[in-house]
Image (cartoon, rainbow, N blue to C red):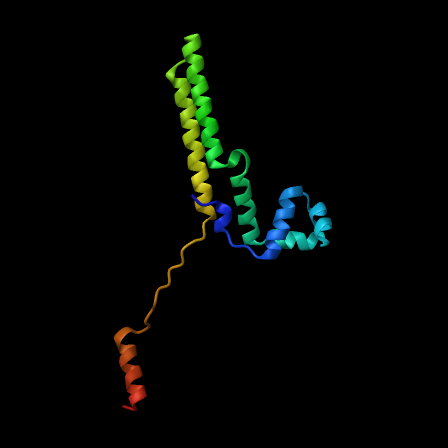
Length: 145
């Protein structure tokens, strides 16, 4: 499975600014480190490719990473099952609530990725006038009256 970061193409300028910004999460420090004005940093960060790249960084790291999140939720379910076995208390409803929550998080994550995906453009050719237009053009080109 490829990393979301590998799929996003960014210019060297965007890469440098976004990388520094993610390190500091501060516009002033980012501008100072890169010897830029804060306005220049903001202009770069406002670009669509910069926003997508930063989103991908945060999705790949920490608890927003899908694999890490799945591992944590699986561990939580296993702990809950173990606790229920040891104490004899709890119901399947407890587990179902956790699984329902996991499912909702996965759906939200998939929706967020779909919303950030580039759209599809459909081009439709329109022939104005249909056959009459074509016949007229042929008559004009051939010199007929």
